[in-house]
Image (cartoon, rainbow, N blue to C red):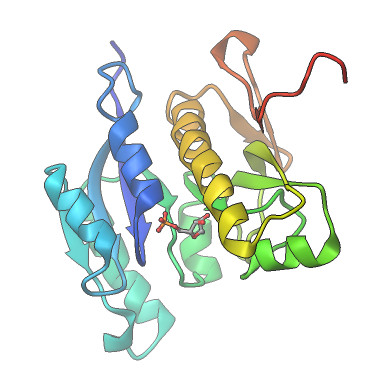
Length: 221
Ligand code: GRF
């Protein structure tokens, strides 16, 4: 078997996407291994999830640093110490500087709860409902300096139901996120996909899809 990619996960809170990655890691042939989970928020729930799974954790509280660069230097030290090769943001709520993003270029992915490039930023589900959109979803993309920007690895579409509230929609999108993130990390870690000209290419059809639908599209469409 080829060696697994050494992965670091950045979190700020609940860590349900982290949990999805932890669960996926249980499969012996999963091409990634979680080496360290770093939170910028002390006491984040995701830290407990990592500890329960036996993964090293680290808190780097951004409030203790005078600048973003100082905070990120500490992040880099922790990532180096854990020998991280691939970085995953999983509900990590800090913007990163261009220098940090450049250092991890095409080795750093993020999950966002909308079908990018639509609905970048916060409160995506509220804004989706306000527009009357019928389909939303989630996206895993390579990180770029601009927020929620970068080559798209994979997306999952989720239908908006007539009586959805922000919470009900968020819950269904989150379910899709968990499947999508585990799937997308597998594609990236295994080298099934790569970035070429700011697009993700190299999809081998037998390796799985990069577009998922929840629920699946009916045959009649
Ligand atoms: C997810 O909706 C993710 O897409 C967004 O922040 C949320 C984090 O949730 N970036 P969790 O911490 O993974 O439960």
